[in-house]
Length: 234
Image (cartoon, rainbow, N blue to C red; front, side, top):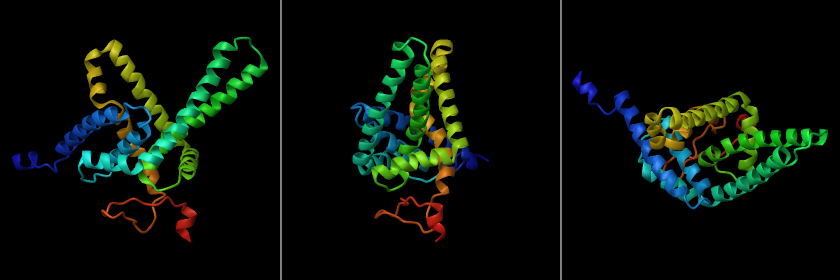
């Protein structure tokens, strides 16, 4: 019994190990996101590791994180700059029509509806784009399209992710005001906890787009190309 308890393959120890990995990832993600323009690369690296954790693939957290950060830095940064600019533009437009254009009119209602819908689409793309970048090789334009395509095709999973992320955000805010003792947990795990939870859903979705034949990089690590299901059947 004791031998099984202290076996590092024991589910309890593996769970504790993953909690430790999330704490390390939280520190890494915050530090590498400080320059702001690196948020795309750091988030891509974060999802690269959390998806490996969900797949129960062994590896060194630090090495895997910085490997992905370096490999995806250029493209992830370009994607982040595009998403940041689009987000600021949408945010300004919504703010303008909600708080500055206060006079009620049909035009205001239409514009709020249009920009609100675009913001929802934006949130869906933002949710998928960095996990996709961490798992598949593609040009920037194709990666953005794939994020939109997957989020719509798997709309129920997408809504589930958005609801889960929203619930975690609400719990985090409430914990600081109503239960400060539990806020320490969110400070320890931070955004990597959200990414880890999301990764269980992304893992199921991404399996549908994996090529039949494994394609590996020079280190023997699986890095598949994105393939449509119609292409796989040919």
